[in-house]
Image 1 (cartoon, one colour):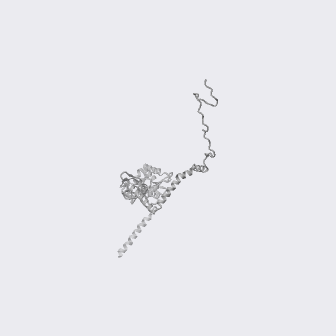
Image 2 (tube, rainbow, N blue to C red; image 1 turned 120 degrees about the horizontal axis):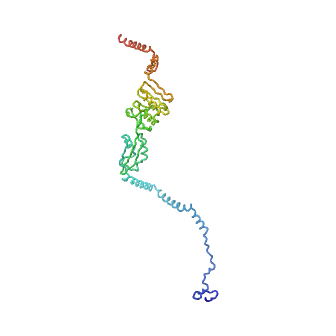
Length: 348
């Protein structure tokens, strides 16, 4: 059984009493000293709250150092000689970098261009080779070259080895356009390619004429394609009133096409020619402007043949009726005139 201990005393497991605490061992507060308050002061609290504001924190971290740096730079650059020295050093460094061998362009190659375009393209180069690639603005040069009528597309790039490469795609002439200002070559889209002095410059190209014809080149090419068997006799297309086409053939024959669906109307005229050999007859005009009522205008020989068959007087070259006595009157006038011219010779 465990041994009994006195109240207020404890015993360890060996039964020894604990050591006695000396009197006065607990620290006692000093008399006459105030206890320190752990709360911050009012100034420290306000400064802490200001530092927690994002705006003030950015100003102190970024604004003040930036302002100090700007002040130092401003004071340094306030002297004109320092500014000139700094500018000259930067310019010399940039020029030294730009004139390195790997940035120099020494030759220019042009592919797909005619001699005229080749010469014009070399003349448009803003610098004289060799030159630095930094001095050649490829975008500005491309814009300037695209102003040439004969150029449809161009690709410019600087290849390794200091070579300025230009690959040109020229417009292909498809038509000759005769207007009041002369003759011009047009591509399939109606864009001007070049000027021509005469029709014989490009006899292989079909001819269109009239104001506003260049805006309808696609329709004109479709008409030339639909001409078929009459193409060897086709002299050209004439734009009438900027609304419709006239097909002009040799011997003065014309096919007047409507404003709408002119290709179908020309195909119908070609079909009539195939069935009835219409254009080989003495027909001056085939009028197809009204699709419901096509009309024919006969030539002068055919008209006089019909008039003689009907017992009517013939027509003259001016289209007027020639009276039977007109030939005699004209003959008498010719004889009288010859007599008048011979009298001065006889008297003289």
